[in-house]
Image 1 (cartoon, rainbow, N blue to C red):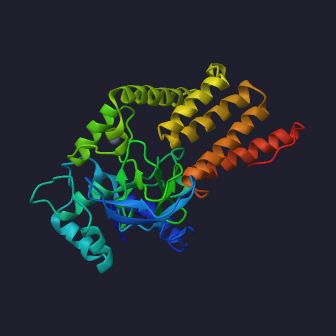
Image 2 (tube, rainbow, N blue to C red; image 1 turned 135 degrees about the vertical axis):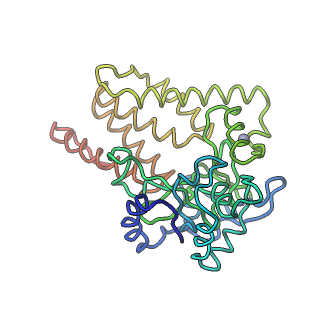
Length: 341
Ligand SMILES: [Zn+2]
């Protein structure tokens, strides 16, 4: 593994990496997928058996961890070729071979070094590096881009069945099944996160210079697209409303029926991260608006949704546990019987 970034950025992450790399990868069953040719999208990942929602499909260490400044815009290659040559030379032979085997869709031009295009095409966000440097810290989240040997083989789908996350405790990238995956199905993840199909397609073309050929888009009729856009807008809007409601005096009035309907949309549209976040935010607001035990139950449901999608070690789960333990203690002090989680 090599790390690329400014001295200040690297000094901020290396201490965490040194601890995390001592730990083994999280446990998962080997061989849950095979890499094979797809019809139109080059190589892809295919499930070799039924994979249940919440199952860890694969976890692996990055080959290259690079600063997001390298990853900024398509035509922005901030370092000299000799810099990238030195980075490549520092990799082991198998790591270099796995990196060179990846596609470069960023069309940086014939004179560009072969490393940045591969990183921009195949990199996944990595960070925060630890639960201690989340967005609450005064430095802001530490975000890099990680390129892996196998994870880039998963193609994009606008309603992907697997979710990528960075495990900062063990310094690895991981895919959890976002819903049940049948044997033989292609395992997909999301490269672009925009709400409507038109926005996603525009982002996709801008970043990868090609069209989105995902199954969700190919199978959708124009009516399906309109309905899907509406549902995704409703999910995004609800989450935005909840996340920006910080003053208890101005909390929105929530109806459980309407929230559950929007959660259903999130599930159907494959927006499982938003699904988990909505549960959490509703819990926060319900603690004030309703019986505190009602809010507590929502928070427990939120924790479960986070774990299924991101694993026990994800920083948001650690954060939820801090809050949950505190709430449980407060409720017990008031005579309620409850435990977290
Ligand atoms: Zn699509």
